[in-house]
Image (cartoon, rainbow, N blue to C red; front, side, top):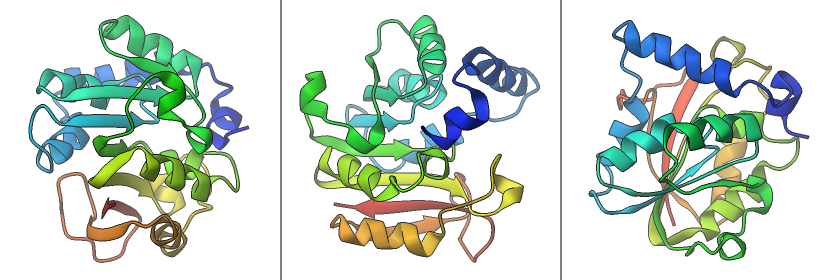
Length: 201
């Protein structure tokens, strides 16, 4: 059972989408993650949105010309994503056991994006398996991009994953750190409660 499911009961898709829709109507920028990814790989690149939720990031990337696939475990979130963009490929799967071949998807993504605190919200003890499975979905030279909170001020649950532990899992999976930022706007990381990490396979 994921920490996300413990938190939401797997029924929060519409509420989650409504919150971001309200932010967008108020003039807030809700596309920072997509803009960040678009600066790393050119249009036409294959992007896996791992823990895609209601599809906010992936739909924007698809609009920008990227070849996208979305994966999430929460059926309520995927229902919203499929309603908003039925033409895009959405899959329900556990990231710790994600197997692109089993879904008929080529494991040669140029970039895997893991936004929305996913690494802090997967099931206890599965972060290493998630990193391994997502690394396996990348082509050689492909990028794993993740952003997650590191303290309670940036998370809906108490943190269980430190940046040091995450880095250890990435190294064990054969990934190399390229850069790290404090925000999706690429502000320099100088410590603090949120980190966006870019690793290369």
